[in-house]
Image 1 (tube, rainbow, N blue to C red):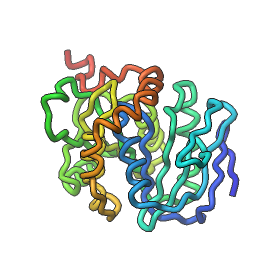
Image 2 (tube, rainbow, N blue to C red; image 1 turned 90 degrees about the vertical axis):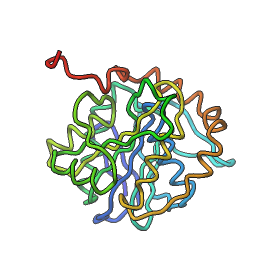
Image 3 (cartoon, one colour; image 1 turned 60 degrees about the vertical axis):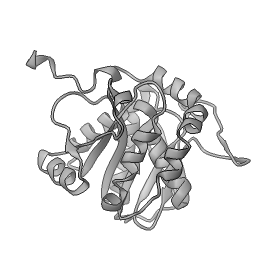
Length: 250
């Protein structure tokens, strides 16, 4: 099925009543969400069900095990759907992509949207086990999810970028959207933060995943993702301001 929303076209083989959570983790702070969702796809091997296209996306073709792939791919497992992106969404496209994504979510009757990402932590090198914070479309939902996931509510500060826009537009559309943020390095890949996000999966989408191989290959993952982190850092806006108090409190 092909559905166009403004500048983006969703090509997918999903039904029109998915009724599952959608996991998204676009390249962002520390690539935490991108690593988490990509690792989930690698380990659980959900069915590849489509892709997202736009004339404004860069002319890049990723190759995986000798197979040419789309830049933004759609997957479906037994208990979840997922979107994997090989590139950060360019800042000029963040608003239109977020609108398109949520229109597609509504049309497919996707149950919930769960954004996995990182939040900048200047003392990350001193932290062995990063915390995971939750920010939802209402405080009640944030508190309920934080309690369920053994996480903390994100109470003060900023979140920026693609996941922030998805949350903001989700609130306006009265959709069940939440962002899970793991304490992360800002400018280089953080598999340790990704692992903490993945450890929330059993209660998030009723899936179990072994993060030990991810942690054991942490340095190799960082080396492999250097170029993606460079492109992501170039596209991120004001990420270093996350976790600061809003100016009104100063």
